[in-house]
Length: 540
Image 1 (cartoon, rainbow, N blue to C red):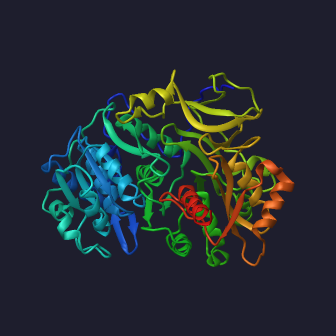
Image 2 (image 1 turned 60 degrees about the horizontal axis):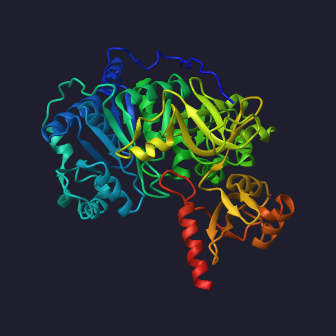
Image 3 (image 1 turned 45 degrees about the vertical axis):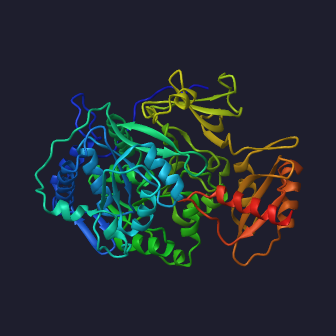
């Protein structure tokens, strides 16, 4: 089913400019900060940076990085947490026309080393708190020309920081804050972000300055609002970083949390009068389930965007009843950009069939559901979700074969299974690689998770396949139970067998207090699968 392309929506403010005379997005964002130079735009704990201070820091960092050879065609790899300096150094790198690669902090050292080597790192910028990991990585990768730290005496800094590299902030303090003309053309590489680091060999997704600029314009359209105060409590290396760009470009304020903590989030919403935030569903559930949520002042919230991993209609309906019409679901992929949106107006707690969908395709995006032969399927049939839009990636970094597999005839093949209904709502059924082939058919993990989550004793679940002794897949589930309830693994298996049939009955159900999460906040099924295999080997 083909969706017509429609014009992009506009926000309340002037859209982020995309003009024929291309300008670096960093220049445009920094120019916008001149309107209110004394306004706080970045908040991190007790620290508050004004627009003037941030603009000065970016230019000083850019001058210091240029002295170290950063420029077009060179990769600056970041190993940095949620600090104001992280955003500033990223802007400085791009202002010079160089491109960045931001490592995900909680990946294993061997995977991070693959990413660093893959992008041919020229300079390595390190958060002092992560100096120990940086030292480990430098022993695993080819020689790096420059290793630079964002300070050496910040609170919580690793004591090994001083021997890892030079203090970039000290070097920047010696530089002028004279505005620098931005480098980089629309077609030049802006950054490389890796996809697949938690499930296999990481794939570097290439993005140009032109795509970055268009992405900020789309972010402003989808996450609009004047006076926006955005709480960032997920890693800046993920989608939260790009949403922060949209907030800063629209004259808003970004409040940074270095780590995810539900109690701190609830307190910050009240104290800082947070209007917007983005949470993956498991993190949203943690916030809702925290005891402080019953009494916290959340009246300032205007929009909570969730997505990135399947959500439970039962839990989302609960959130709507408790928080009101502030939830918005977004579905997309880094390779494909934003794909669909379920706005707050359509979050009806009494219509789980709508909450089970990912909404309708966003303006400017075409979606088709295709079978294995590439044939477009009619409404209601499950197939691969294929996308065509201006937000698609340019390709994978130095991997033309994989690029050709994914980008075909102008369409992005997402690797997700889904369907479009007669009303145009898109439902994401599963990842093709996550679908579990079992004797007699296959099990869609999200479908089984949705069913498990309707049990009154279940708060959250994760379903994944584990190979048995004979090499065939078996369905496993890890379930978080609701406080004050009692249920056994066997009762849940029987409940699935009766409600969904023997095909969907898990071979094993593990009860847990929490689900392990990845750096981005997704259920870490790789870790759960490995634990299940280890237990299987131990008892066999």
